Amino acid sequence: MPKYRFICPKCKSEVEKITSIKIEVVECATCKEQMARQFPSYGSKKVTETVDPYTNVRQEEDQKKINQDRKTEYFWEVEVPRLVQTYSVQTCLEEGWLVYNEKGELVINKPPSKR
Image 1 (spheres, one colour):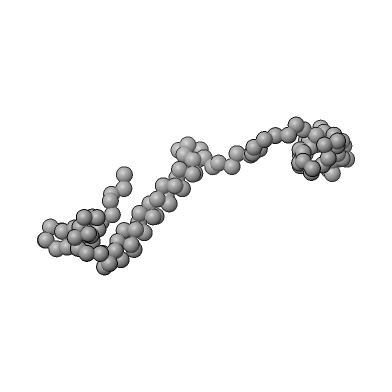
Image 2 (cartoon, rainbow, N blue to C red):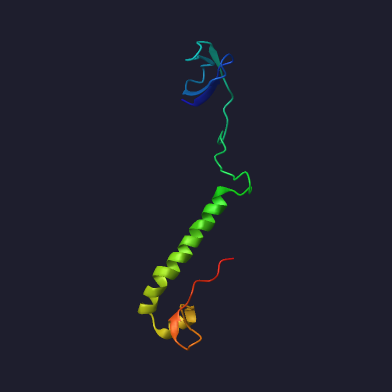
């Protein structure tokens, strides 16, 4: 059986019920009026996307950027020191994990600057 949306004309309450195709009206639980069956709708009824009203930026884009920044920070703070211990000096220099500082010492490179 399909799911239909019913709206009460008196109290404007909405309810979704799984009913037979033959059922056109159901009784409203609030005011006991007859609720009319609506045409089936496709897709979502509500927009759940959060937009900052001041900057007009969607939450998804911000969240993707935050996650990418966390991954980059984790890579340079945790993974690079581990990789430096594992791989040869030549490989570390080629990958940019190790660099020579102004004193000529071999040190772990800093993460790329944020844009």
